[in-house]
Image (cartoon, rainbow, N blue to C red; front, side, top):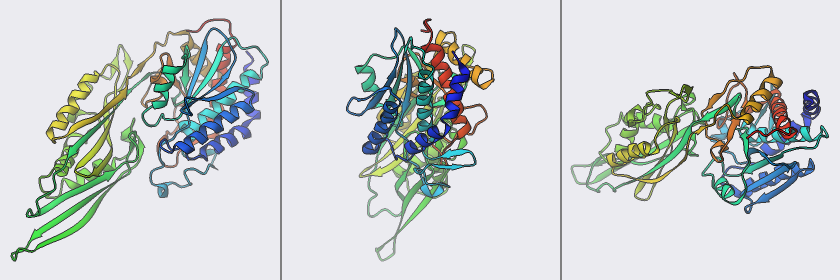
Length: 458
């Protein structure tokens, strides 16, 4: 395979890559805005068709497929067009859905997760076809639309279509991530009794914060009622609010930010609140969830290694909380190290629910990933990375949850290079333009080594 031709093709199409990535960023495809998500999907499919690829929407717009080549094996590239909400738009230095190039970086929601990498992958596929050599394998880009929420797209896809034999998702970091932490969302519902009109004191009446289950919230607000019963029997009431401010980051690495729910809970713990369900919940959050490493809930990981490979520890974040009629609803996002038992996680949260008189309303997640680095396709990914970058490959752990969990033999591979800032799910999200192009080159090298070879890589 001619690596120099692949690199030359990517460099010659630098402006096209930047333009297409910017156009895609400009579509505000937040996961629950199905109209805009479908618009983003159709936009990607249109780019694929313009490149001469087979491209189609499937499952009533839940997913898309772009293909090149034929053969006995299929290399999958799993991507997603949906994005998380921008959070506080006023905190952005540039409008979140207006692509801006500044200081060699492309800014906008989705720049690194996952819109820039989608475009890099498409141009990588095109670079391989431009070599003019018949492909010996099928290369299939599978485009999801609900990766940032509950993965209804991939659940439907794996039931309806043949799956690739192996592949990657450009939704993590370089080098090759053969291990990925598990992710579980646990939603608790805590029934709330209305304080008797004759009771006086300081009452926590509502608490609301968070925008997505996998984002550490940057704002949380509590409503309080101070009720005083005068000597003449008249009731005096004063309503006021408290606000917790944080720094929004991806919940896979909450230590990088500041959790507004926990900040507010800590603030509330200093007030003489009446003993009500919301107050008990706030105290529990301050007492048992201040340590993100789960020591307060009995899930602390004593060992950071599994069979000699680094898997990190269990970490947890409350990510969304809301007050509704007669109840408080709260979501916890837990990232589990490989080897952590699902039943142990559930038991821990059943105990928490019991402490505050609540119940588990949702317990859903995806398991950790562990793919042997000895698999032939893994060695190809590693060689492609080393050839293009000149850096030594090291099989590593991915902290986030990606579509690598959706199918067997898929690993996260890119888009961030060692030492790069990770702004995924943060304000001022960006991808460096040089990195965007380097992604395309690495992906093209990996695709070419597999698709142009007669050898098998399962």
